[in-house]
Length: 320
Image 1 (cartoon, rainbow, N blue to C red):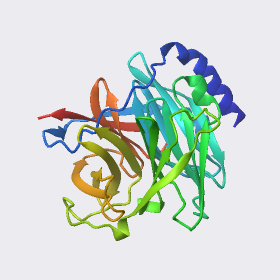
Image 2 (cartoon, one colour):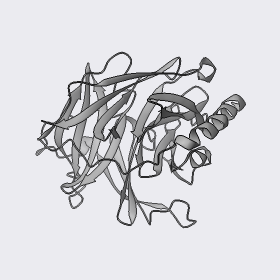
Image 3 (tube, rainbow, N blue to C red):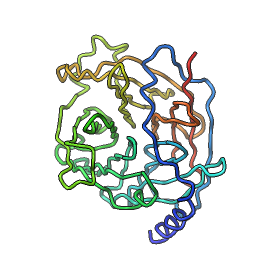
Image 4 (cartoon, helix red, strand yellow):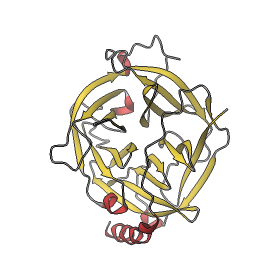
């Protein structure tokens, strides 16, 4: 593990001159019927040195913003983030940030909201404990620092895990969504303000939504999947949560409107489903997310493994 830290530190010094600060994620593009996923996607394979291979586990989540690519992963010993940067037209591997040791060796789907990354780390064996770390991604120095804030969860098996985490910065607070095992239940939290560095910063539970008890009368279809990644977004039409899942041979993004004034049974209303064709080892089972790439709102999906190559696929979203 010492080798990883040395390599990461050296890479940070090289990359600092090139870093571009993350921007606000594009407003939810999917519910608008005038916009569709482009049928053409871009596949990218990024070489990663073999000495950074971690035994067991696989890649779990992905976010891409302004040339910075971050993937989350699980392994036998540690949960981690792998950092890449777009330099001179190509993504370069910079290094690995260790998040936690076993039994918390499973980092799941995650989201970046402005300069804050929220990632869930869970015990995949006991399935009774998890934590959500908040990491400042405004510079490589802050990325490599300890998390600014950690939210801990503990309780019933499969109920207190955190395999999919979504984060949205709103006026005066963060909205946090945490998916339990298979995202069967989604717990929502709100923060008291928007500075995780502050001593008084914290989250309070807002509400929970259980897919097994949901009223699906007004859904576009009645299906609810095992979502590897969740993403929160907001635009003039409302707040949305998008779930990314691999179902059979399909890679589906299911979009739900968050009815904030509704009862817990009607909190989420499914409004759209989109499918894309992934190639190679890239699937929504390994993680996917909304992003901007070359000024286009996009979906990015990641492959199964970190080494010898990390594969991603980018799906631009464009108007018809």
